[in-house]
Length: 328
Image (cartoon, rainbow, N blue to C red):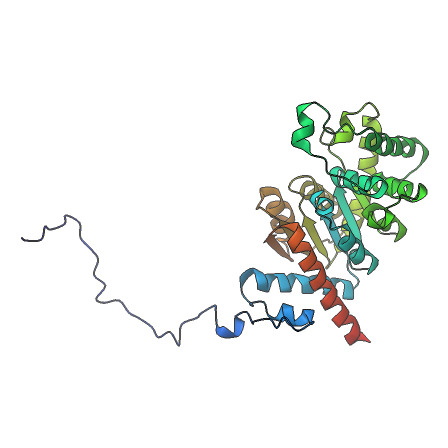
């Protein structure tokens, strides 16, 4: 049976010009491959060296060096964070980097502050929202609202403290039993700027009778200005990393950066990185791309905090200690 002819014409490949693979530019070679890790070795450096030098693995090593070099040259390393960092049990690692002098400022949303306070005072946090929502008790823990709103109300009228400093001081004053796990308290003890950025109506303490909108707004506004004062130090270098805040902190950072540039500070040439389990529009635009478009470098890493933060913090410590030993 004769083949049926197509009504469509195919292009001929007969005159295609080929090249040798030996002259072709290629991005992957065996020298960049992962190495098997000897599990009998206790060397963390050997583990890091086993990573492939390809794509995001290469970029992560690059970012870590930016952090270490920033501190080597006395530039700030600012950590912005959502509540998930605390809910996944990572506070001790954050505090460790603070105490080592690697993280020089912390900015958090007010949900993170709630988890920090609940952990410090009562040793538990992160209620079951789905269950408690059914009977209207979600977010109605009396002690949480009374403590945080009480601290804000008192310092609103009796001090010049901002939101973060007020909570940190108050946790130390009452000698909270789990103070060692409090990022707020450890920042205040270490004289590290710690700021809390509230969006009224987003947090459980806003739905309780102790809530004072004027106090919450003013205390968060003070912290916005404190945060902007830390951002001005990014002149010529430094690092800003955002862990898990998809909206609040990226917006806060962009506005603070605008303020310091408007005031004449040459805040550029710094490095940014966003860490989250999904890709989000605002962190990509307001942390990674827009702030670094006039010099600098932005990174976007995707992964679960409870895996990524222990890895990144250990990588930073390892490189930081190597640098310190070399300087000695």
